[in-house]
Image (cartoon, rainbow, N blue to C red; front, top):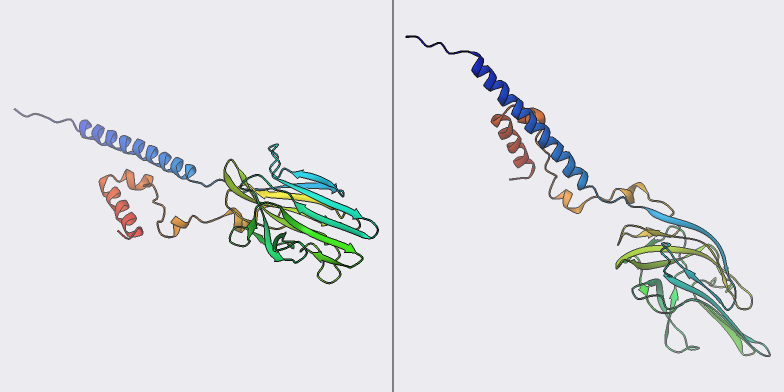
Length: 267
């Protein structure tokens, strides 16, 4: 007795296998795309705020870099007159909250005794980061001037070296914390002359990515800073998901894919 086998069953089996492989390939590819999307780093952004604020003698201004209602740095102008001919001017950053610091250097002075912290008067384009600058906490001076009958003295990077005239369009380098994470920023000021000194704040900015520096005067990201390479990428290339074609070819296609991935990773 002859038993005839219907050719439709193997065909249906092959169709079913191809359908399952096709669905698996779609799912694997979608999962790979989702994983790659999740792995993308947060976009860097510099937040710039223009300003037109005059800090008059014996006044101060609370600088809130990121607009969260918390004063990050207080800039104060001080002036005092001692008749008949002596006056003292000082422009400085008052004691900021813990963890917030100003890019500054130390200078020795006999008039006030010992070393004193003076803020850098940064020019446009100078880098602001932990690697590029020394930062100091507490009170940091910008200018220190005294005129009296015995002569005068002038200190601070915000005064011209020879003429002792106050400088304009210079930048404070700032390091401050947002939710416990370090961020960098700058404040652009014009130091003012005359009795009591003072300053004019003309703008400020900060980098939204923690621990990423920026340049003085930088108002937006550059292509280089936007596309920071992942350090791990140079030593561990990202593994690509299996393609639809490889999965559709079944175990042979998967074996070829695994072999290419092993060669890529040096395994």
